[in-house]
Length: 187
Image (cartoon, rainbow, N blue to C red):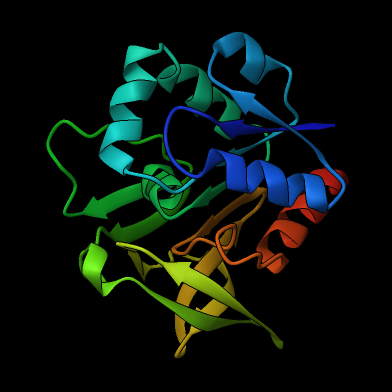
């Protein structure tokens, strides 16, 4: 059961390491052919506008949209932005993949110099994660909130789609990936 990690830009290596550490087979995905071999996909953090442009340039936007419509997908930080229905602060040329019926605000915690680590709560399981130019979920639209920070949603689930405003892969936090892999196994 290979889990693909979209490898156009962002924290690809870190997600692959974390998925492998949890016992999964993780592979880099840069082409439609590689995507077709995967049972699930992680869209990593990075820069959402850059990833959007690369999806278009590599002919991957429509295939990834189709993948999201039927298979498990996890988006972290920029990946969450790309999976969102609506983005406050979206640049005019930024394409979205969609799939999550949520609204997020880009760079809501501030710029790069405002990045921080914090403990998030997964219903009683706390883990330290990194917030780097992180978006905020401003409307969950009926999604299940699976992690919070100060009572605010920072990770959500919508069926087999998961999204988080933070980077768990940079701090070694495993709970988000565990929940995602559990969903992948149940499909």
